[in-house]
Every structure is written in structure tokens, then in C-alpha cells.
Image: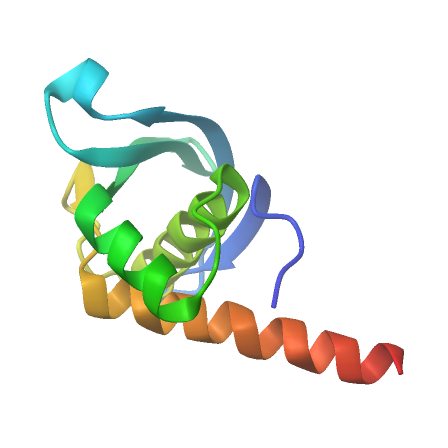
Length: 126
């Protein structure tokens, strides 16, 4: 699991490496009247540039955080969104979208991956 969710690279199914840079995180209510947290990324591959917003609906975030007994934090949201960007690029799924909404099951799966990676890292430290 990556440690830096602010700047990373991902290969697409066509063998190209995309550089991903996190730009900002904001409550979507203030920019598009949505009950969500948005994370914006700049993607680049050679001369090609894209902007991508990952939208995490607030009710789903609260539900997944509650089920996982974890605090809803900016850092956790950034990691969930970063995993969504990684999946989008690596599968090329939804890359036609400017705003990609993360479903509750996908959030739960991302949280599970983060939890498992943290447990593995802890086991290695011991």
C-alpha cells in the first residue's frame, strides 16, 4: 500500500504511467450543493493533462466510519479518494468522468484495504 496519497504514479491498462497530484479537499456543499466531500486531483501523462474530482457522499462516509469504528478525518478521506483514483487509472474505468462518485460498498472495500495494509505494516514492525 502506498504511503503518499498526495503525489503518486499509476500505470494504466495501456502501459502508460500517470502522475497523480492531490490539489484540494473541500465540502461539496460549498461548491456544488452536494452532501459530499470532494477531492480534486491533477493527472498527467506526457503532454496529456486531466482534472478529476473524487466525490465521497457524506452519508456513506459516516456509515462506513461508524461500521469501522473510526473517526471521519481528512487524512482518511484523502486515502479513500486516492485509492479510487488508483483504481480508475489502473482499470481505465470511469476515466471519461470529471466527477467520480464513490459508492458505499467501494468505500468499505477501500477502508478494508487500508486496515489490512496497516495491520501488515504493524506486523512487519514487530
